[in-house]
Structure formats: C-alpha cells, structure tokens
Image (cartoon, rainbow, N blue to C red; front, side):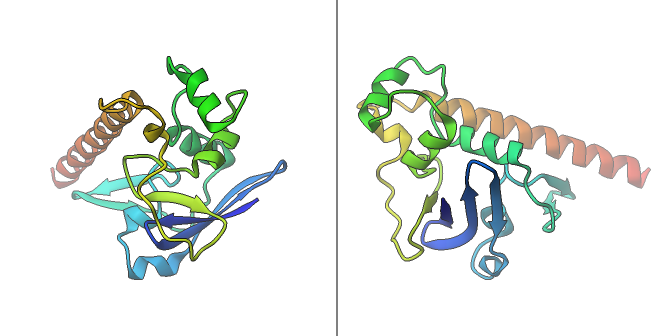
Length: 169
C-alpha cells in the first residue's frame, strides 16, 4: 500500500507499507510551506539541538524499525485496558500495529499528521484513535506520550546547552 503522509492538508511524504518493506520518503518541497519539524516528523528522523535550534540530517532515511516505532506511537498501546473494546469498535479481531495504524489513518488528537491514499482528501480533526473512547478525560496514551516527548526534548536541550558551554570553555 502507498500512502500520502499529510500535515493537515499539505503532503509532506510518502509511506510505503508492504510485506517486504516499510519506507518513508519526505517531500522536501513541503519545507516552503511548513517548518522542518512538521515536514520531518520527530520519531522518524533523529534531531540534534544546537544553540536551541533543531537540526537534522535531511538525507537520512528512516529505518524500518524507526517507522514501526513511529506507527506504534500514533496508536493506542497494546496494554490499554479497553483495548479489546476499541479493536471491536474498529472492526479488528487482534492487535496489529501496522493494521491498526492504517485503520486509524495514523491520526492522533495530538497533531494534524495523518495518512491517506488520496492526496486531495481534506483533513478532518475527527476520527482519531482517542475519539473512539466515549470519555471526556484526556486520553491516557496521549498524556503519557506527551510527557515522554517533553522529557526527551528537555534532555536534548540540556545536552545541547552542556555541549555549548564546554565548547566555549
């Protein structure tokens, strides 16, 4: 299957999912309309922080493991208590990362990143994995994941500041 990866209504990449490979190809021209962190999604591409600025190797190619971890990050976790009810609501019998990612179209309530087979399809903020739950509470996975991301960014910035100080000394 070949998908367009979109940030809202802007195509930022192509995702190839087959039995033989997982591949992500960024669309560099999207940089004219979006910042680098939107075109090269964190989790797929490694970032370094220098003087508080995010840098990445734009020639880097995400590994299949990185793509799979990124997919896992965009769906509810296997350990989620209401997993079986959510799978039933989606029409799936078992938990499979790639199938679940495809069914949920890679959407989460955290951002406007998603996949589609039609590059002209407009973005809708509805139908995310967390919208399957009928609760008014913050989705457990979203809150946990956001905390992990903030901790990671904090560590990267701390490392960057430390590097900057030792370079100046």
